[in-house]
View 1 (cartoon, helix red, strand yellow):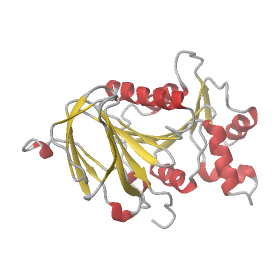
View 2 (cartoon, rainbow, N blue to C red):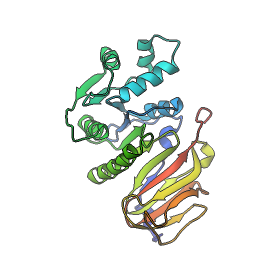
View 3 (cartoon, rainbow, N blue to C red):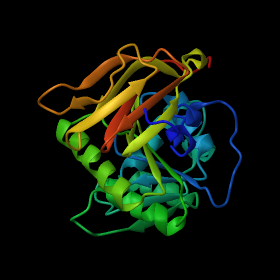
View 4 (cartoon, rainbow, N blue to C red):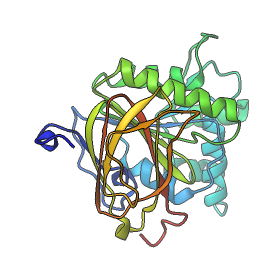
Length: 268
Protein backbone atom coordinates (compact mmCIF):
# COMPACT_ATOMS: atom_id res chain seq x y z
CA UNK A 1 0.00 0.00 0.00
CA UNK A 2 1.37 3.38 -0.91
CA UNK A 3 1.86 5.77 1.95
CA UNK A 4 -0.77 8.45 2.02
CA UNK A 5 -2.99 6.70 -0.52
CA UNK A 6 -5.89 6.40 1.91
CA UNK A 7 -6.40 10.19 1.96
CA UNK A 8 -7.32 10.26 -1.73
CA UNK A 9 -8.61 6.77 -2.40
CA UNK A 10 -12.32 5.96 -2.68
CA UNK A 11 -14.01 4.27 0.25
CA UNK A 12 -16.80 1.92 -0.72
CA UNK A 13 -19.47 0.29 1.42
CA UNK A 14 -20.99 -2.66 -0.47
CA UNK A 15 -23.53 -3.37 2.29
CA UNK A 16 -24.97 0.12 2.72
CA UNK A 17 -27.68 -0.32 0.11
CA UNK A 18 -28.96 -3.35 2.04
CA UNK A 19 -29.14 -1.72 5.45
CA UNK A 20 -32.50 -1.20 7.13
CA UNK A 21 -31.85 2.48 7.77
CA UNK A 22 -33.54 4.95 5.44
CA UNK A 23 -30.93 6.90 3.48
CA UNK A 24 -30.83 10.66 3.21
CA UNK A 25 -31.88 11.84 -0.23
CA UNK A 26 -29.55 14.20 -2.09
CA UNK A 27 -30.76 15.76 -5.32
CA UNK A 28 -27.25 15.82 -6.78
CA UNK A 29 -26.35 12.29 -5.71
CA UNK A 30 -29.14 10.16 -7.19
CA UNK A 31 -29.40 6.40 -6.78
CA UNK A 32 -31.18 4.34 -9.43
CA UNK A 33 -32.34 0.73 -9.26
CA UNK A 34 -32.42 -1.29 -12.49
CA UNK A 35 -34.38 -4.55 -12.44
CA UNK A 36 -33.31 -7.02 -15.12
CA UNK A 37 -35.21 -9.94 -16.61
CA UNK A 38 -34.00 -12.55 -14.15
CA UNK A 39 -35.76 -14.36 -11.32
CA UNK A 40 -35.69 -12.43 -8.04
CA UNK A 41 -35.41 -14.96 -5.24
CA UNK A 42 -34.93 -12.69 -2.24
CA UNK A 43 -37.78 -10.27 -1.52
CA UNK A 44 -35.99 -8.70 1.45
CA UNK A 45 -32.97 -7.90 -0.70
CA UNK A 46 -35.20 -6.32 -3.34
CA UNK A 47 -37.16 -4.32 -0.77
CA UNK A 48 -34.05 -2.82 0.78
CA UNK A 49 -32.59 -1.86 -2.59
CA UNK A 50 -35.95 -0.37 -3.55
CA UNK A 51 -36.01 1.72 -0.38
CA UNK A 52 -32.52 3.06 -1.07
CA UNK A 53 -33.30 4.07 -4.66
CA UNK A 54 -34.55 7.46 -5.79
CA UNK A 55 -36.19 5.84 -8.81
CA UNK A 56 -36.61 2.40 -10.36
CA UNK A 57 -36.25 1.35 -14.00
CA UNK A 58 -37.45 -2.07 -15.11
CA UNK A 59 -35.48 -3.25 -18.13
CA UNK A 60 -38.17 -4.64 -20.44
CA UNK A 61 -39.34 -7.97 -18.94
CA UNK A 62 -37.71 -7.03 -15.67
CA UNK A 63 -41.22 -5.67 -15.10
CA UNK A 64 -42.56 -9.23 -15.31
CA UNK A 65 -40.06 -10.32 -12.67
CA UNK A 66 -41.12 -7.50 -10.38
CA UNK A 67 -44.79 -8.22 -11.04
CA UNK A 68 -44.33 -11.89 -10.12
CA UNK A 69 -42.31 -11.07 -7.00
CA UNK A 70 -44.74 -8.51 -5.60
CA UNK A 71 -47.96 -10.37 -6.39
CA UNK A 72 -46.54 -13.52 -4.80
CA UNK A 73 -45.37 -11.62 -1.72
CA UNK A 74 -48.80 -9.99 -1.28
CA UNK A 75 -50.89 -12.88 -2.57
CA UNK A 76 -53.75 -11.99 -0.23
CA UNK A 77 -54.27 -8.66 -2.02
CA UNK A 78 -55.76 -7.83 -5.40
CA UNK A 79 -52.86 -7.64 -7.84
CA UNK A 80 -53.26 -3.92 -8.58
CA UNK A 81 -53.19 -3.13 -4.85
CA UNK A 82 -50.14 -5.36 -4.42
CA UNK A 83 -48.28 -3.69 -7.29
CA UNK A 84 -48.70 -0.25 -5.77
CA UNK A 85 -46.61 -1.27 -2.76
CA UNK A 86 -43.47 -1.35 -4.93
CA UNK A 87 -44.10 0.49 -8.18
CA UNK A 88 -41.28 1.24 -10.59
CA UNK A 89 -41.26 4.71 -12.07
CA UNK A 90 -40.20 3.54 -15.54
CA UNK A 91 -40.28 0.51 -17.84
CA UNK A 92 -37.85 0.81 -20.73
CA UNK A 93 -36.52 -1.36 -23.54
CA UNK A 94 -37.46 -2.59 -26.98
CA UNK A 95 -40.51 -4.12 -25.28
CA UNK A 96 -40.16 -7.41 -27.11
CA UNK A 97 -40.20 -9.59 -24.00
CA UNK A 98 -42.48 -7.87 -21.50
CA UNK A 99 -45.89 -9.53 -21.37
CA UNK A 100 -48.82 -7.40 -22.59
CA UNK A 101 -50.69 -8.07 -19.33
CA UNK A 102 -47.85 -6.74 -17.18
CA UNK A 103 -47.20 -3.75 -19.44
CA UNK A 104 -50.86 -2.75 -19.33
CA UNK A 105 -51.15 -3.30 -15.57
CA UNK A 106 -48.25 -0.98 -14.83
CA UNK A 107 -49.32 1.59 -17.42
CA UNK A 108 -52.75 1.72 -15.77
CA UNK A 109 -51.01 2.59 -12.50
CA UNK A 110 -49.13 5.51 -14.04
CA UNK A 111 -45.77 3.88 -14.71
CA UNK A 112 -44.03 5.47 -17.70
CA UNK A 113 -43.42 2.90 -20.45
CA UNK A 114 -40.92 3.95 -23.12
CA UNK A 115 -39.56 2.07 -26.12
CA UNK A 116 -36.04 1.95 -27.53
CA UNK A 117 -36.07 -0.10 -30.76
CA UNK A 118 -32.27 -0.31 -31.06
CA UNK A 119 -31.40 -3.96 -31.78
CA UNK A 120 -27.67 -3.45 -31.22
CA UNK A 121 -27.89 -2.72 -27.50
CA UNK A 122 -28.93 -4.96 -24.62
CA UNK A 123 -31.69 -4.37 -22.09
CA UNK A 124 -29.00 -3.40 -19.59
CA UNK A 125 -27.47 -0.82 -21.94
CA UNK A 126 -30.88 0.64 -22.71
CA UNK A 127 -31.73 0.85 -19.01
CA UNK A 128 -28.46 2.60 -18.13
CA UNK A 129 -29.03 5.08 -20.94
CA UNK A 130 -32.53 5.72 -19.59
CA UNK A 131 -31.17 6.30 -16.09
CA UNK A 132 -29.00 9.16 -17.35
CA UNK A 133 -31.86 10.63 -19.34
CA UNK A 134 -33.76 10.80 -16.05
CA UNK A 135 -30.86 11.92 -13.86
CA UNK A 136 -27.66 13.12 -15.52
CA UNK A 137 -25.94 13.19 -12.13
CA UNK A 138 -26.82 9.66 -10.99
CA UNK A 139 -24.10 8.63 -8.56
CA UNK A 140 -24.97 4.96 -7.95
CA UNK A 141 -26.80 2.43 -10.10
CA UNK A 142 -27.98 -0.73 -8.36
CA UNK A 143 -28.61 -3.65 -10.71
CA UNK A 144 -30.81 -6.49 -9.48
CA UNK A 145 -31.12 -9.79 -11.27
CA UNK A 146 -27.55 -9.80 -12.53
CA UNK A 147 -24.89 -12.53 -12.89
CA UNK A 148 -27.37 -15.37 -12.70
CA UNK A 149 -28.85 -17.70 -15.27
CA UNK A 150 -27.10 -18.19 -18.60
CA UNK A 151 -23.30 -18.01 -18.61
CA UNK A 152 -23.09 -15.96 -21.81
CA UNK A 153 -25.48 -13.36 -20.41
CA UNK A 154 -23.52 -13.19 -17.16
CA UNK A 155 -20.21 -12.68 -18.94
CA UNK A 156 -21.87 -10.14 -21.21
CA UNK A 157 -23.01 -8.17 -18.17
CA UNK A 158 -19.50 -8.19 -16.69
CA UNK A 159 -18.26 -6.81 -20.01
CA UNK A 160 -20.95 -4.12 -20.06
CA UNK A 161 -20.22 -3.21 -16.46
CA UNK A 162 -16.62 -2.42 -17.42
CA UNK A 163 -17.65 -0.43 -20.48
CA UNK A 164 -20.09 1.70 -18.48
CA UNK A 165 -17.49 2.11 -15.73
CA UNK A 166 -15.05 3.62 -18.24
CA UNK A 167 -17.72 5.73 -19.90
CA UNK A 168 -19.20 7.19 -16.70
CA UNK A 169 -16.32 7.62 -14.27
CA UNK A 170 -18.40 9.49 -11.68
CA UNK A 171 -21.02 6.75 -11.42
CA UNK A 172 -20.65 3.49 -9.52
CA UNK A 173 -22.58 0.46 -10.81
CA UNK A 174 -23.30 -2.32 -8.31
CA UNK A 175 -24.43 -5.81 -9.31
CA UNK A 176 -26.66 -7.68 -6.84
CA UNK A 177 -27.43 -11.37 -7.26
CA UNK A 178 -29.05 -13.68 -4.74
CA UNK A 179 -25.61 -14.65 -3.42
CA UNK A 180 -23.19 -11.77 -4.02
CA UNK A 181 -22.47 -8.08 -4.53
CA UNK A 182 -20.03 -7.16 -7.30
CA UNK A 183 -18.39 -3.87 -8.28
CA UNK A 184 -15.46 -2.69 -10.39
CA UNK A 185 -12.47 -1.33 -8.47
CA UNK A 186 -10.52 1.22 -10.46
CA UNK A 187 -6.76 1.51 -10.68
CA UNK A 188 -5.12 2.72 -7.50
CA UNK A 189 -6.09 2.19 -3.89
CA UNK A 190 -9.59 1.45 -2.60
CA UNK A 191 -10.84 0.84 0.93
CA UNK A 192 -14.04 -1.11 1.45
CA UNK A 193 -16.22 -1.30 4.55
CA UNK A 194 -16.78 -4.99 5.33
CA UNK A 195 -18.50 -5.23 8.74
CA UNK A 196 -19.35 -8.92 8.92
CA UNK A 197 -21.06 -8.39 12.27
CA UNK A 198 -23.98 -6.64 10.56
CA UNK A 199 -24.96 -9.95 8.99
CA UNK A 200 -25.43 -8.45 5.52
CA UNK A 201 -22.26 -9.69 3.89
CA UNK A 202 -20.29 -12.84 4.66
CA UNK A 203 -16.59 -13.57 4.65
CA UNK A 204 -16.05 -14.98 1.15
CA UNK A 205 -14.66 -12.51 -1.39
CA UNK A 206 -12.86 -12.48 -4.71
CA UNK A 207 -10.69 -10.00 -6.61
CA UNK A 208 -10.88 -11.03 -10.25
CA UNK A 209 -8.68 -9.76 -13.12
CA UNK A 210 -11.56 -10.06 -15.58
CA UNK A 211 -10.37 -7.08 -17.60
CA UNK A 212 -6.74 -8.08 -18.03
CA UNK A 213 -3.62 -8.99 -16.01
CA UNK A 214 -3.20 -6.99 -12.81
CA UNK A 215 -0.77 -6.57 -9.95
CA UNK A 216 -2.59 -6.27 -6.63
CA UNK A 217 -1.85 -5.75 -2.96
CA UNK A 218 -4.42 -6.37 -0.22
CA UNK A 219 -4.96 -5.85 3.49
CA UNK A 220 -7.68 -7.22 5.77
CA UNK A 221 -8.04 -10.64 4.18
CA UNK A 222 -7.00 -14.02 5.55
CA UNK A 223 -4.63 -14.44 2.62
CA UNK A 224 -3.20 -11.00 1.92
CA UNK A 225 -0.84 -10.44 -0.99
CA UNK A 226 1.71 -7.78 -1.92
CA UNK A 227 2.58 -6.84 -5.50
CA UNK A 228 0.96 -10.08 -6.62
CA UNK A 229 0.49 -10.77 -10.32
CA UNK A 230 -2.96 -12.13 -11.12
CA UNK A 231 -4.29 -13.14 -14.51
CA UNK A 232 -7.11 -15.23 -15.95
CA UNK A 233 -5.62 -18.56 -16.99
CA UNK A 234 -2.93 -18.21 -14.33
CA UNK A 235 -3.61 -17.46 -10.66
CA UNK A 236 -6.59 -15.52 -9.31
CA UNK A 237 -7.91 -14.58 -5.87
CA UNK A 238 -11.20 -16.39 -5.28
CA UNK A 239 -12.81 -17.62 -2.04
CA UNK A 240 -10.56 -15.42 0.08
CA UNK A 241 -11.80 -14.61 3.59
CA UNK A 242 -12.48 -11.14 4.97
CA UNK A 243 -11.08 -10.83 8.50
CA UNK A 244 -11.33 -7.08 9.16
CA UNK A 245 -14.18 -4.56 9.19
CA UNK A 246 -12.26 -2.58 6.56
CA UNK A 247 -10.26 -4.13 3.72
CA UNK A 248 -7.91 -2.46 1.26
CA UNK A 249 -7.09 -3.25 -2.34
CA UNK A 250 -4.42 -1.67 -4.53
CA UNK A 251 -4.31 -2.56 -8.21
CA UNK A 252 -2.59 -1.32 -11.35
CA UNK A 253 -5.72 -1.88 -13.45
CA UNK A 254 -9.45 -2.38 -13.00
CA UNK A 255 -10.53 -5.58 -11.26
CA UNK A 256 -13.91 -7.03 -10.30
CA UNK A 257 -14.47 -7.23 -6.55
CA UNK A 258 -17.18 -9.61 -5.36
CA UNK A 259 -18.34 -10.38 -1.83
CA UNK A 260 -20.75 -13.00 -0.56
CA UNK A 261 -24.23 -11.86 0.43
CA UNK A 262 -25.97 -13.30 3.47
CA UNK A 263 -28.66 -15.81 2.59
CA UNK A 264 -31.08 -14.23 5.06
CA UNK A 265 -31.50 -10.50 5.67
CA UNK A 266 -34.83 -10.63 7.49
CA UNK A 267 -33.33 -10.30 10.97
CA UNK A 268 -30.54 -7.85 10.07
